[in-house]
Image (tube, rainbow, N blue to C red; front, side, top):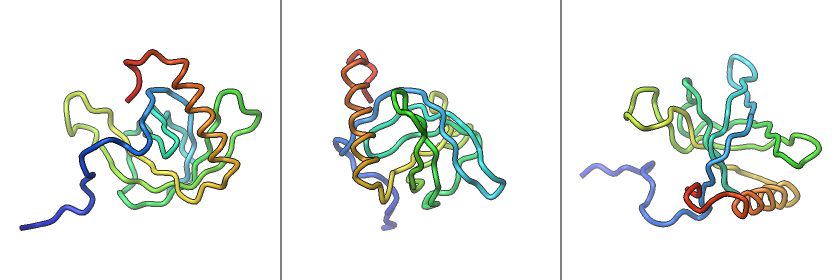
Length: 126
């Protein structure tokens, strides 16, 4: 029987997603691209894009969080992609897991996500 190592294990997420749009820039072979993240958690985000990078690709991200003076850079890894026409109600794009985040950035992300969680209605929590 074939195994599927990239398929996520069912169950609760370690870091629940919050539906929230924010601009994000990342480097591709063609240069920097700006797209919209459509949800965020303390562990990653999902970028709405017609041209997702392959699963496993490491990316440099520049993220501007509301309430912070300067954008900051993060490193992430593509963990899942949704192709453009893969399912009727599915947003095309790629899920990015943050990797190697220093304590300062992790704290800022966690504080932002917690402020957002308190501000959003319960039905907008992923």
